[in-house]
Image (spheres, rainbow, N blue to C red):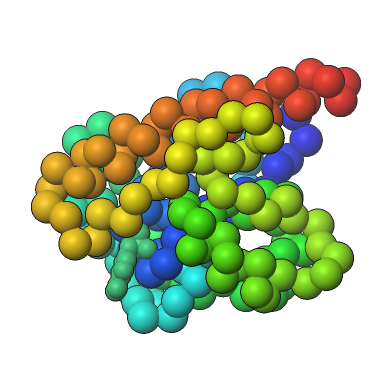
Length: 160
Ligand code: 4NP
């Protein structure tokens, strides 16, 4: 499979998108898939920060370490550096579309709607929830990630 570049995006880049990056990285590795992954936020509130401790803990429970990640804000150059830019919710997608160049490489979609005709919904912001919200987020991200990786594998088979 050719290398595929994927950027996951949420608001603050400390809860959902770093968790999505960590899950995609772990699950892609299990499948032997060659992905380049990163994550970013539409807002700059937490630039330079570690992921939220509740995201770190929720993923540690399934043996995924995301403590090497630091928050950054999405930039215009991302639209040509990535093949996929995956927004966690509709607000994130709307904000991405405001800065998306008219012509760019990336397919910019909601993560839960990476392919038309099928929806896994928005990944709700768990920032104001307790620990349980982060477990629900983790399961939702895992379900979408498996479906997304299936989709990439299917596209790869169609191409070759
Ligand atoms: P995230 O969650 O977008 O999943 O990283 C949030 C993180 C921080 C804030 C909101 C949501 N905040 O308002 O600071």
